[in-house]
Image (tube, rainbow over all chains, first blue to last red; front, side, top):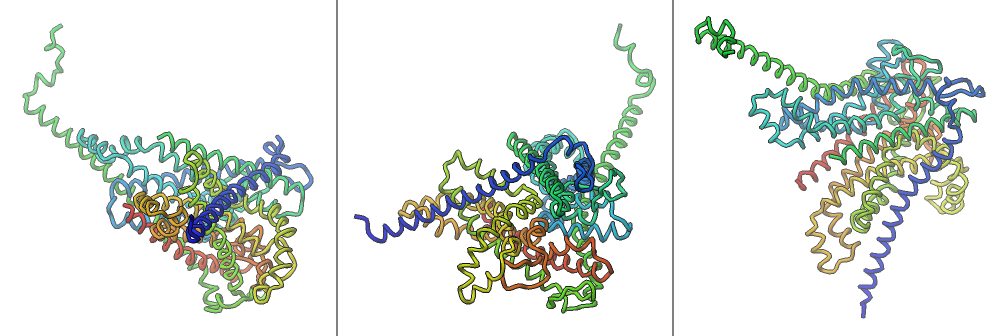
Length: 278
Length: 338
C-alpha cells in the first residue's frame, strides 16, 4: 500500500504540474488576447484611405500616409547608419581581437546597450544633436534608432562569425589571401544568413520604438520627407492619437498598431525562418 | 604558327634576370598594397569596436552634463523630495523613483514564478513536438512593441480591471487591516497595479526563454540520477534543476528587471501620470520613464528640462547596475556549461 508520505509527494507533484500547465496557458492566453483585440479593433478601421491619405484634424477622414512613409525613412536611415558600424565592430571582436581585453569589454558594454532603456537613448541624442542644432529633425530620429540597431547587429555578427569554422580561414590563408580578403570573401559569405537575420531582428526591434523618437524626430502632421524637419512616424502617431479624446483618431491608432504588429511579426518570423534554414 | 613567334618582344630582348627583377618589384608593390588595405580594414573594425564604448560613454557624459544644473540646484534633495512643481521650479524625483520601483516589483512578483513554471513545463512536461511552437509563441510576446501593450492596456485591460479585479480587491483585501491600505480608493482602471500587470506580461517572455535555456543545459545525468532514486518531476526540478541553474535564472530575472525598470511607452499609457506617492496600489502614479515621455517636449525653462534629464540619468545608472549584474551572472553560468 502507498504510504502517506508517498501520497503527499504525489499530490505535491500533481499540484506543481497543474500550476505549470496553468502558467503556460496563461502566457499563451495573453498572446491570444492581445492579438485578437488588435485584430478586432484594427481591422474595423482598415481601408485604402489609411494608406493614401495624410493625417488630418479629427473628424475629416484622414489617413496614415505620412507617418508610414516617415517610419520607413527613419528605419532605412537607422539601418544605413547602424548596420555598417555594427558589422565592423562585430568583425573586430570575432576576427581580429577574439581574445583581446578590448573585445571582452566591448562585449559586456554592448550587451548592456542591448537592453538599455530606449528613452535614455532619446535623451542622449537630444543632448548631442537636437539641442546643438536647435530643432527636432528626422535625422536625429534616424540616429537615435541607429544607436538601438547597432548593438543587435554587433551581437549577431560576432556570434555568427565565431561559428565560421577555422579551417575555412586556414584554407584561404594557405592560398595566400590577406586577412581582410579572407574576412570579406570567405567569412562574411559563410555567415551571411545569420548576419541578415540580425539586421532583420534589429529592424523588427526599431519599427515599434516610440520612446527614442519623442524628442528627436518628434512628429509632423504635414507631409515632409526633409530630414532636417521634424518627421512623422507611426509609433509616435499611435501615441498621440491613442491619448486623444477623438474616436476617429483612436481608431487610426488601433489601425496603425495593427500595421506595426504585422510588420514586426512578419520580420521576426522571416528572421527565424532564415536562421532555421542554415 | 610556332609558339616562339608569339612571345612578347620584351621577354626575348631582355636578359632573364631583368624580367625576374621586374616581376619581383611588381609583386612587392602588390603585396604592399594588400598589406595597406589589410591594415586599413583592421583599424576600421577596431575603431568601430571602440565606437561602441564611446557611445556608452557619450550617453553617460551627455546625461551628466544635461543633469548638472538640476543636481547643483537641488543636490541630494532631488532624490529625497516628493514635490514636482514646474511653476515654482521645485523638483524632486522621489515619486517617479517610487513608482518605478513599485511597478517593477509587482511585475517581477508575477512574472518570475509564472516564467519559471512555463520553463518547467517546456523542459519537463511538454511533449517534444509541442515544445518549439509554444516556445516560439512565448517569444513572439517578446517581439510585440511596447506601444502595442500600451494601447491594449489603455483601451482593453484597464477598463476590464476597473470593472472586475479592482472592485473585488477593494471589497476583499481593502478591508483587511494593514494591507488594506494598499487597496484603498476608487477603481480608476489605470494606476500602478495596472502598470505592474502590463509590465509582468512584457517581461514574462524574457524570464521564460532564459530560464528554459538554462534548464535545458542541466546535464541529463543529474536528472536521470534523481529520477532513478524515485524523485517526482517536481522534486527533480525543485532540488536538482533549480539549484544547478540558480545563477542563470537570477541572471534572467535581472535582465527582465532591467527591462521593467526602463520600459516607457506601455507604462506611460496606463500609469495615470500623477506626481505623488500613494500608499494604494490602485491609485495613479508615475515612473521615471513615463515622466520623461510625458513632460519632456512640454518642459519650459532650463531647470525643468535639466531635472527631467537628471531623472534619465538616475534611470540609466539603476538599469546599468541591474543589467551589469545580470550579465555577470549569465557569464558565470555560460562558463560552467562551457
